[in-house]
Length: 582
Image 1: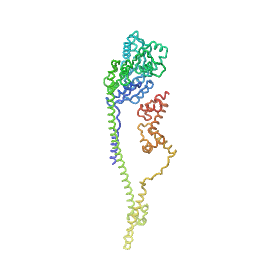
Image 2: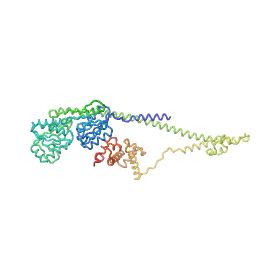
Image 3: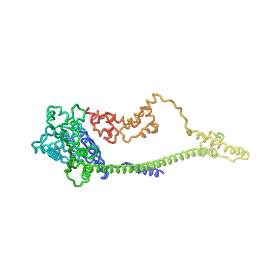
Image 4: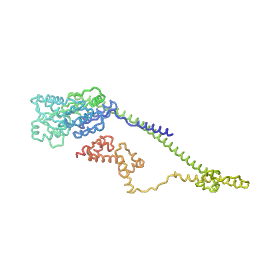
């Protein structure tokens, strides 16, 4: 029987172990320097590209133009055990040490879109930013017949695209003696920075003088900054400046994104005079990453092709871009449906295996209970037999038969033959008394059996549940309940698999009972209280230790640093990495 029980347990464990999700073949970390529509498009392409690879997991991080945050995020991604790092450095120099640490630790590094001043990278992929600036300079000079005054709004200071686009733009205009760059303003790639840079400049003496003499074109190093500058000149902003419409200059940018509000549509609708397609190609990034991890040949430096967008080709490019976006969306939807279907199948399989495991365990429990019950019956039967054995007239003194209670008396136990008095043959006069004794024995035996049965029945606990008197909850009992709940939570705070069912089990309650009690007392659900407790512990660890955000996230029971960061921002209004600096 024991062998059968062990077999059932091993089979259940084997089946239930199949419910766990297998580890991805490759885990790729993506460190974006910022979060904008260009990078959202690229992230979407990265996910779509991963669909065509076998079991690849992507982990994203966005630094929101913060060098310190990106360095911390790169270190956190490395700590989670990624197989390859894709990174767009925020600035040319400040991110290099973190990239070097990744490369020196044996992690392949793909630098894309922006350069680093270190040579410690596995591959570099980007478009030619210098060529973009040069082509835009030639285009603007041609449109102005080689004579005009231009304002340039640069991207984030210290970033390689801003530096290279400016060099190409200035080099192109240097071939036109009557073209003049009257101002080079500093932005940070956002629309607001472009608007503010132009607005602040126009309030200076040099800006007012330049505006009075006329500005023929504004070149924003991306479409969003060009649109921010346009708001100032058209008066479509919140400042006190009056619209500058005499005449309105041309506006050119770079990015040329398809879709609603993208650069291609802005050119088609004559809001921008020109743009330049800055390719995202997230799918090619994934192909390159997997080729590196698979040990296949690859180009260490890969340059992406791009093209200028003007009113002559904007409509065709927009149609092509929108069609590609529709196909991508359909592919994404199809993949999501397939994922949903596979998840349903996996859930059904898991439920089936859990049901089988539960049935197996129930069978084991029934078998064990049955064996225990049979054992108890056998034990009681043995005790009765032993008691009745003492009533054998050949083994018990005659006086014990006259006293039924003596059956349980140690003095009534069987005597050794040597100690028994020698028997003599009975005479006819003695037989009546022997027959009388024989007649009494069945009645005495029946009385003893009845007494044993009564004793056995009294020794068994009552099976009828006693109804407990319900008493109104008091403040003391509520406080005791909350204390128990808090202790249960804190005892297992670092357990990422902890569930409400586990807490209820620790407190000897059902899930529904725990939920209702906690909700009635605190107004919050157990899950909400558990998340709050984890975030508070995480806040304390960030303040009192030098552990990274990822380490803290795992220490307080979160399964992903990104989800910890999201919940932390919602709870405290700031990112975890900002706690120590503030």
